[in-house]
Image (cartoon, rainbow, N blue to C red; front, side):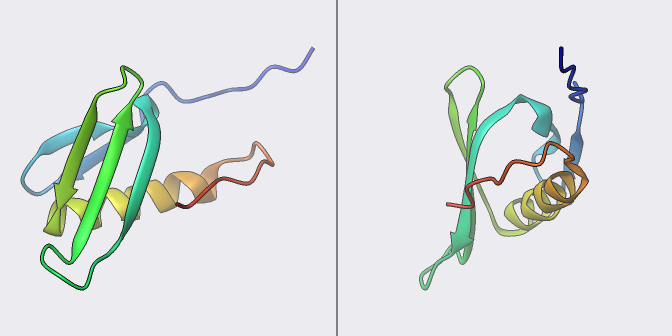
Length: 81
């Protein structure tokens, strides 16, 4: 039997939206736009709720998400869309 250790809390401090627990994210979409807001992140939470973050909040989330991915040892690729 394979047992995976998954963190129940992976925090991210955003400048304007407070603390987020990225362990509760079902899907994250991020990228740059040619029109304001230039940085935007859309998170779909485990509950199915969607939340959009822009500007400095979006940058903080992307950095924390990339750090989480780099620490993941599950061996499976992830979709960056």
